[in-house]
Image 1 (spheres, helix red, strand yellow):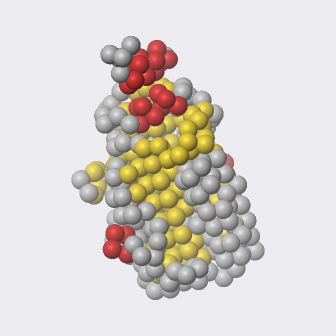
Image 2 (cartoon, rainbow, N blue to C red):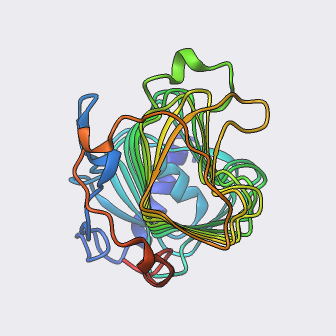
Length: 319
């Protein structure tokens, strides 16, 4: 038994569980990454994940983590609940996609550390003992799409330490306080300035308290066509000279929809346009921001339509 590696055993078990090695409908791209994850930059032409690599289906945590830790491209289909702990690494060139509406990662989270070209779609994240998804140390070209995130011990999504070219789209955030952080501290300008270019679009920030997102240093961060509802602390916060465009969103019952500066962090630049504010406070704005259209093309939906279209389209089981 000692001559057989743990990886070989896990690979064999996972292969036994596979119904097929051909690409089923779930692995075929139903859409492509847009926003900053779709930009040709840093040697990566958009975000394609594990396209071109083998398609595997995993039904237990050991097999799941084994494939996440491999160097080769993979499309990893998650079938069922993966119970993990702490932050577990994901290597480059991976697509991690849930099957149906019941695929879940619980107890821990995923950590992208100096990685690129990763897609995370159609997964429920619950009860992480740290961050649910951490993107850090110059990781780039990451697309998080159609996920459901709630109930973690720290952030649901942290994008920090020089990470770049990220898109967060069509996700449901709920039952949590600190939702999405861009830039981990006020002292990290050297690593983060000129980076942290992130697009948030068509997300539902559903009763989450704050950080939708909270930004330091990065520019431009593009927050458009999101539905903010009952966010008790604030909606979007631009701090430490970040540049954030908040465009064509719907804010409902949000006392502080947009802030420039927060807590001990200095003010950031923030431009707002085309937003709807219902029973919400007055947005704070400051200065000018680089236009996202200098990086990619987009067409915002009408902000007034978002309370209908966003809840109907976000989360798992919708792709």
